[in-house]
Length: 143
Image (cartoon, rainbow, N blue to C red; front, side, top):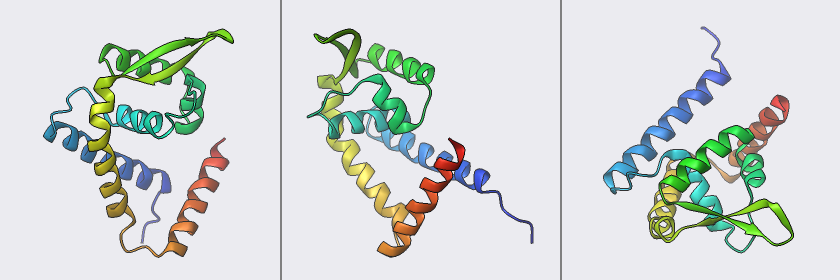
């Protein structure tokens, strides 16, 4: 039997997740939100009590500064996020969800929870801990 590639399997899983989210967004007429936008909106919503900056997104999603910058520019054009200056450092721009983004957050949370349940269905809590450990180890190996 041919050995499977972990990288290919993870890429395939990522493609399936993206396709499911894009389908969900289309069915719910959230045309301006892509999969990446959805993850960022959810992260900003869940951390609304904190000041979140571009560097926080880079760390959370393990993506480069240029990628985050491009995504945020598009999200600003779509009216999903705004960048607000902070008094302590004129170079820093705090990321804030717009009213438009907040309105779709509840739908996205519900869908995200359902997707997480689907992904983890049939796993025991111990298996999930092991899986998260494996994923973290792979991420650490790549850093």
